[in-house]
Image (cartoon, rainbow, N blue to C red; front, side, top):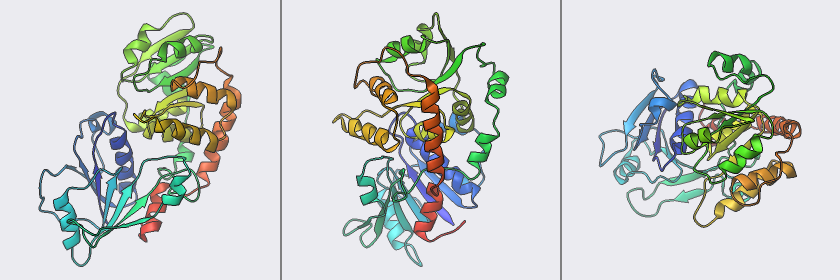
Length: 343
């Protein structure tokens, strides 16, 4: 089947990261994908060539485009489809495509209530069509999480020490390894001080904090600046580290599949709605109280604890949480089931 996947890059590459993973997962399951994106520059490092032949990368339409819409159209994160394309969806013969609004990820209770709801279109170019809301999530009453087939086996067979050594990113004896992928954050000096309480190698990904992290290196804290990593290598970085600091949605999900302790920097919203979203996930995952304090501190919602808690208890919690998530069908499997299509 042919899938049209629409993505607008708001900022920070997260929307594009999620959409590329979905497109790649579709291609690996034998589907054809047109990925329409308004700014594809980040794919140069996120998904460098060669890319799957089943994925066609298309510029976001400035006006009408002379194409027949595919069998399924996905509007990622409420990006609002071009009106001319919606009109072509309504006119498609022998019938219109299925229309899915793939929503943002949240652990809040409303996700279970909203998942799968229909939105009939009564006006505009799509009058007569029906859009359905598909919500990723962490429970059986949601759409699940993106997870490519065979991921758990890949992680189990992975030798993180050897992988780090091959890239000259190996820790010195006695150092723990921490990855840092973050938005701008005034809490970085406090984090660096907390990490330095035990010998730590901080692997800083490109972004607004990389240069600042390098400047904070000192006794107990060694910092390496990493290059941009393609998605598969970023995933391996998470598998190889003892602790991962992640942000947004894509790296947040991949940290959970890594099964390692992690700290999430949630995307800040001007009305502070992210506070409730952060709390909802900590409750849903049953995060230990001492690590909740670290999460809240990193997100600027509380004072920093005197010392970072030990990793062993939260490492066990992270593995248990991953096993719970692995017991649920992945997002694409659920989406195909919802649509009544198969690979």
